Length: 279
Image (cartoon, rainbow, N blue to C red; front, side, top):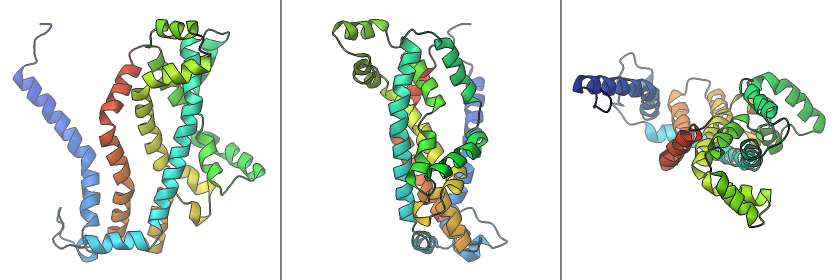
């Protein structure tokens, strides 16, 4: 019947399924962290132990931080992801506001183009962008890592869905007070869209922090390496068998993302929930 709580057996089955899914998703990360604490002999031992029997974490983490300039790679990753997100916000918020609240000819067609672009992987247009940046002399620069991602069609779509839920009366009141459209965007709409911005920020930062494909072809200078390239560089220096330091480096690289998600978890859920309320 409507409104009745599920039967205890059904609730138990649901929780067991969720628990099994969580175990499957978290198992690789647990093995990564556990391996980062194991000495080399134990990693290559025929006898498997889930937890380290001897402590090798100090050597692994010291090697990961000293064999390659991992801290510098992390700083590059922070600069690139922060610059991309900032530029995406500057582009996405006004574009989403226009698609959600303004009336102009071709609006439906333009939104259809945004939806179409959602289905195009950026790897498909990587070669034209590479040629363009080569002709402009922008390869091997921070600009080559940032500029291709300043427009995010996913961000425009997400913010547009959120803005659809903002009452029109709020915008009309701002116009009556003499506020310009750009003033409405940044003084009225953006503050209300903090949950959506946080949700999009998590998606954006995770995607570009972990991006290996584009930095691999856009930069060749080691000083511009991002964290994924740094891990690959560590693997080359360790002849591909230094699994302890590699897992330690991967743990260090992933740790900021996990921390950021835990801090922004509530806002992230709010942004995803409210952005899907209207179509």
